Length: 308
Image (cartoon, rainbow, N blue to C red; front, side, top):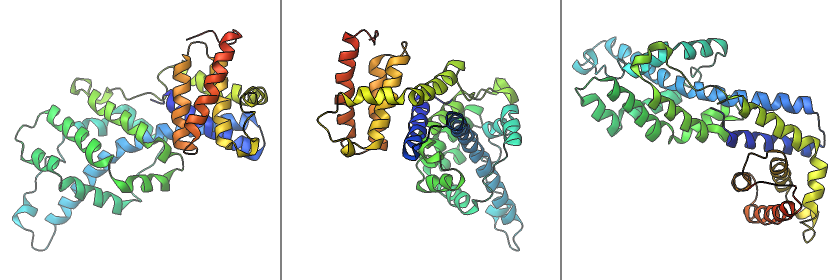
């Protein structure tokens, strides 16, 4: 689930912190990297759990209305489609979901106001009204309802980022990427798999985990060498006027260019230019692109980079 886009962002943040503090404790940096990636994976489960929590919040609301002194006919006979949703039942009982939530307990219980408001938004939506009126009680309809709700209402909710920030400083950087994986997971759910429906693993395979730690080590171990190389292409720029984040991004991009022969040059350049757009100045992308492009041309001529 944790892809290389997210890994690169985390390595940039950690190397930036090391440069800012002028310390390079590799063991501490590696621990920080693993912690931050684990937090990203936690968010995946936290967002899956949100759909279950919303279902439970609706059930509690129904029970409270039934218990009123003078319940209306609607209170006595509420629409039960949300509570009986087959996709949510499968997710709630999923063995991997249950185990993870038991091993790393976190819940939405401290965000009652957020849950109430989000539930109101769902119940007021056209998607819910169509779902509640639909007499087709198939698994596919139930799963598609939550895929649509997650994409159109939960992901678009402005308060979600504030709520996530209260739980973890890492999560706001991750939320869009992790949301895409939650949607992928919903789409993959199949009733034939029952409670053993596979969820996404933390890493797609061991190579992604190795990529994360090798990129961090190379960026820190050989940081002076990479910065000296970058300096050759920034002679027309006053060092103090170059944003520290720009230097860090170029340092890590250089590490990737020189030590990962299987990653195409264009992929590396595009990834770090995109990171600069989110984490550095407005002019950083064009600056970094120009410096790295010139560097790559020379490194190819010197045969230090032998790849497309």
